Length: 85
Image (cartoon, rainbow, N blue to C red; front, side, top):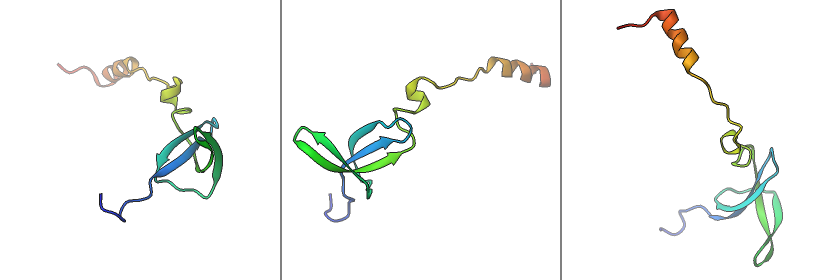
């Protein structure tokens, strides 16, 4: 990698705004807010980024996703426009 052209890649804590869940990962995102978090090497201060949706609150991952039935729609289409041979 060329030096001086890549953004700073550092540990960041993300917080889900809906559930309050926190997770520590590495990112180029920055924030003026910080949070104290205990790690294996002691307590450290990390930037805090609040996100609206994460895997903790997304309907697909929580199992609350709605599925749409298409059988009734197909029948209604055939009634309306007829079935062509």
